[in-house]
Length: 191
Image 1 (cartoon, rainbow, N blue to C red):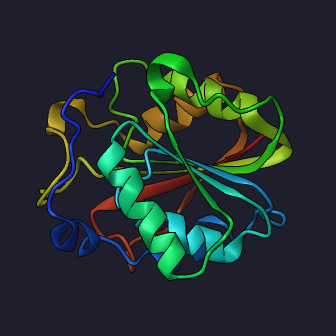
Image 2 (cartoon, rainbow, N blue to C red):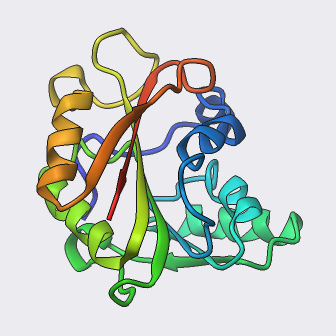
Image 3 (cartoon, rainbow, N blue to C red):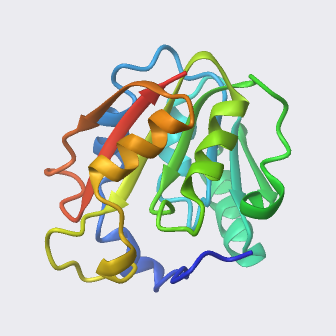
């Protein structure tokens, strides 16, 4: 089930919005060692491959689009990153398929404009180990951006914080992404 106003632009245009290495440096900074990571909606692998370079275990890259998963798998193979596992999954309708408490970090980027963001956050909470962390990035709604869902359905950082807390996350705090993702805000929460 694709979320409202989802879809990917051309890859070259998409990657121009992010410095993924710097963003993950900020988002993973207070995480304990990242062993196993799950990424909800991996797209072109913009964050998948940098996460795989940081993780000591498997990075599970989930997406509903077969062609995007093929791109990520090819990129991981070309980069000799044997710790990337791609999985075709409608995680909104069916969950991740991962066992409870098996992941050390979860990434939900540009997805919380979906119809039921708390359900998605609860699924991330379910698969995280005790002490695991969730990083969230979303399009800002306080400035014009060249891409992203309509402003009317973009959540604010406070809305995302509230949803994360409702899903069970604690110590939710903002992460400054201004220098690496100027059209986005970031949050991190712990299980």
